[in-house]
Image (cartoon, rainbow, N blue to C red; front, side):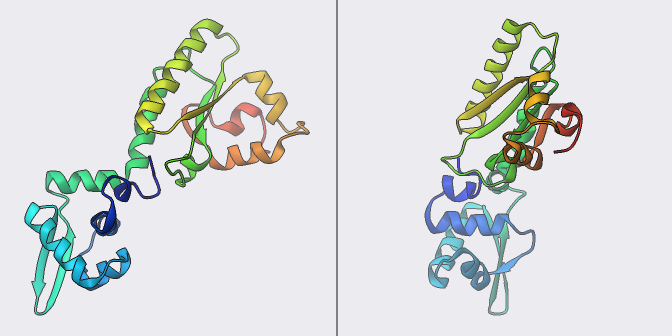
Length: 208
């Protein structure tokens, strides 16, 4: 899934660009302004807006010679477009629900990389760092984590790249005394969105 342009990914062409532009603002926009933002010709934009208005997806209001439009968020179709525009946030919330089902409870489970930065496109991986607790049963942990990865991939629509570390192993690799990979671990710390467990700095013992 393209999380940078989710509306355009599902609704291609000029219609998708116009809907995406409307979904980014709460206020009404003149058609000319909307067309400019979306990169669509004024005449074509007017025709598409008329069609979307007839479908109840867009609200259209005339003030003199100016036509103001907005996304009809109160309609079922408008609500779907609005949710699609904010798909990344919804996926993160649902990933948290999936992460809370992992047993035993991770020391931390977080996402990093393009998805966490809001830069994931259709070719991006969903990068996940999982840190198992010291007393975890290896088989139970592996099965639970594998189940999470499969569900996360189905949910996000992007392949999952999973890093699985024991707590002490992670501290050796990412802690303040580590000599290799410091830039990588800094990027993990900078991007991290925690889905379950503790913050990254808290489990490695100190900031990088």
